[in-house]
Amino acid sequence: MVTVKTMKRWFTSLTVVAFILAAAIFNWSLLVSSKKPSDMEIAFVSDKAQHYSETGDEKLASTAQVPFPSMDVTNINTLDEALIKIQELEKRLKDIEYRIPKKYPEVKFLTFKDRKRILITGGAGFVGSHLVDRLMMEGHEVIVVDNFFTGRKRNVEHWIGHENFELIHHDIVNPLYIEADQVYHLASPASPPHYMYNPVKTIKTNTVGTINVLGLAKRVGARVLIASTSEVYGDPEVHPQTESYWGHVNPIGPRACYDEAKRVSETLAYSYHRQENVEVRVARIFNTYGPRMHMNDGRVVSNFILQALTGQDITIYGSGKQTRSFQYVSDLVDGLIKLQNSNYSLPVNLGNPEEHTITEFAMIIHKMVGGKSHIVNKDAVEDDPQRRKPDITRAKHVLGWEPSVSLQTGIEKTVRYFRKELMRSKHSERNLHIPVDVSNINV
Image (cartoon, rainbow, N blue to C red; front, side):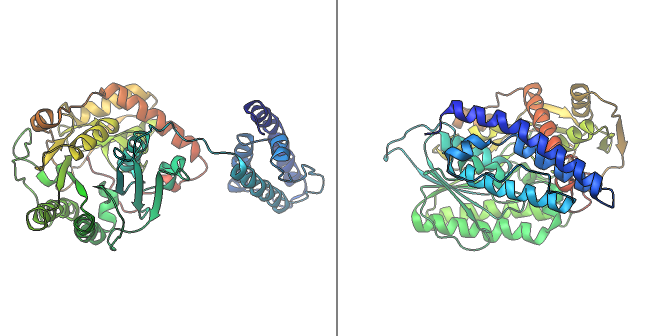
């Protein structure tokens, strides 16, 4: 049986071996190759060396009865041969990882009576994955449905294989047939670069997708929580925004594909409630931030942190007097669960009533991160809301909910996450790609 002590020795041993191997491979490639390796090739070898240094050693491989490839590098004469050797190591290490029992986060035990079967559409996304963590740790069965347009498998991979967890690659614009007690309908791109990249698909996800979710709920008797948005208020003329405010939306503007689609999603929910007796809950979500945000999210938090960490100018579009309120993702998850389990069926604002100007927020990020960045202003963009602040009186009264994580604490955690992400992708620009040039939006 493999002990923790054996595993620790394994990790320590291969750290040394991996770097020796990487150095040997790199040196041989320089000595015998007729051409100098490119930066991409060097980065590839470097990344693989780091991967092996963090994995295991030959002792555990032997214990697990998996033959470990020879560490002999004397026959490696070209970079191609070096890469083949690395691929062999990678394959063997995957075999080893498969044989090692997987350790999951601690999960509370619930009786069959108390345990719910919960479907989360968009569960591999930013907010959805945090909701998955909370519900799994509370002991429920969780089914995640995601098409991975903005969601990422690695956001939930720590649950894969757990008996209470299931991950399904599926686009909610197609019907879904699953048994569930509760549904959280979070599937939709939520940042301008993502929802403007394919506006028609954004509309379909929030209309056809919502019809499919509500139809499923009707068939199986599930309660549905619709993740709506503060964007239903448009560029509001009432401050702060209460749930009774009907909004001020441009129906043909660049943001309309999201704003109007979410308004229709709410209309569909209450139509199914009145006509088909489907239990519905509607959360109007205000600006949310935290770990697992995309670096190409295109919103204020991710834009400013990324610009500050990479030494770019922190760019404000417009005067900077526009205001936003920012809530940390754990506060939002808490509010979503409380709303789902409440007896209240009308829309509820979930957001932080603490209001900051865009300029103030840029200064907070700049001070926290430091570096050589400067704060600069550029021309304003179309339909950029001037003020955004929720009235959460209803949430306090019917849910007993209000945000508890301070802006300072939340931003510190998010900055730490972004630093790690930048280290992960230092040899690749794939995580920095923005599919369409609409990043110049203060969301």
